[in-house]
Amino acid sequence: MTAIDEAILSPWIAAAVLAAFSVLWVFLGWLWGRKNKDLDDYMLAGRKVGLALGTATAMATWVTSNTTMVAPQLAYQMGIWGMVGYSLGSVGLLLFAPMASRIRRLMPSGYTSGDFIRLRYGKLPWRIFLGISIFYSFGWLISLGMAGGILINALSGIPYWVGMTVILTICVAYTLMGGLRAVIGTDFIQTIIIVIGVVALGYLTLQRVGFEEVHQQLQFRRPELLNLLMPAAIMFLFNNLLFGMGEIFHSNVWWSRAFAFGKGVGFKAYLLAGLFWTPIPIAAGFAALAAPALDLNVPQADMVAPLIAARLMGSLGAVLVFVVVFSALASSLDSLLAATSDLITEDIYHKHIHPQADKPTLRKAAWAITLLLGVGTWVVCLFRLTTLGSLLHFTGAFVASTIGPIVLGLYWRKTNPAAAGWAMLLGSLSGFAAYFQIGFYVAALIGAAVSMSVVVAGSLAKPSDFRWRDLQEEEPSEERQAEAA
Amino acid sequence: MTASVDFLSILVIAALLLSAATPVVLLILLVRDWKSGGLW
Image 1 (tube, rainbow over the protein chains, first blue to last red):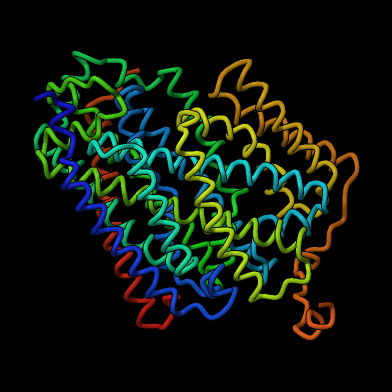
Image 2: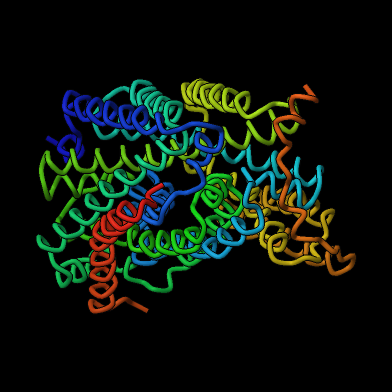
């Protein structure tokens, strides 16, 4: 029996685990969905989410299958800086904490990140932003759907299309039934499962091998992994930092939570989520550093976590990794489905196609759009068009170009709307060019730098004088809506 | 520049302790929110 065979769960056990968790998530989605009375309940969980659920949902959404599988892989390939670099992905969450509080205060009745760009910068920059944001969201959805199929197949032998179909169907089902409330509630349980799994793996590694032996074997067999000045790892660190900031600052996944959290919760929730997220890639990555000490042959670097778990815990280790990866996938996929559906419902359907739509109509539209997004993602995932990594790095150029316009738009009255639009466009194009001309590791860096330079220069040359109260959009009254209809 | 065994130990122990504390803190916050009626 090879190490890979040992790490693979029996398809029957895997199917039983999948079925048990699927029933649980769908039941909870149905249960919590019964509390939803109107559009705000469905899209934003009633705008009163407390600190515990707020912290857990921000954390769980940012812990993707990448965090649990790629962090150990990076530790195995890039050493200490690989896992520390990955953990710096939390900087985006930490920096978003004050922004979340400001967003909630400036836009108490806002729905999406698109609302902010439209009210702050006008129609053209808004449409550029929507193009970037929807492209990114769809890219992330596809990569998560494909990751689901690939990982379930790698960990259990269940065919790719079966695993991908199961995870997408389950997430779409409970998101449809319970809206953001179901997403946030299940995220809490998923966070607890993920963290316990990661800590158990780290602790068992420590107990079985110990630091002295891990360090000694690394120095003897893979000394480059202890190098604190490894150039590739340092470059990865900065690119990852900016990519993470761009992803969080612009994406409606994080904005919708800022709107959904109760008054005074956003700052604390994002701060705590960032602090709690930081050690996860290190705790998960450490096990991979123990591979030489365990005398483990790793034929595929991306399978290092399940290989270590199986070596330390036997078939129980394979179950543990499977449950953690499934939870990490579901916690991000559900959030992304809900937030992308909100963005399309509010910014495309409501603001472009049916401006007179009342709230019950919008709720039906949100439901239908979630379903369509799920079906669309499933169809694309069936083709396995591109690899998970390259698709995500590709979007890095685009999302990083939104950092300047978002941050300056939130804090600096003089930010010029036209400059913000050009910044997103030129930043995306230059990041895109850098991706092909230089490499994936500089795409986000160049996109962010060009965009920030354009928005600052344009705003200094022709300063705007924005009134913050213009962000508080009046909701048309029921009578006015009826009259217009 | 090579990481020493002490550096590796401190980094990993801190990460494991903070991660282990996370579910405990989240559950305490959950009970507190639930008691004050501010769960969601």
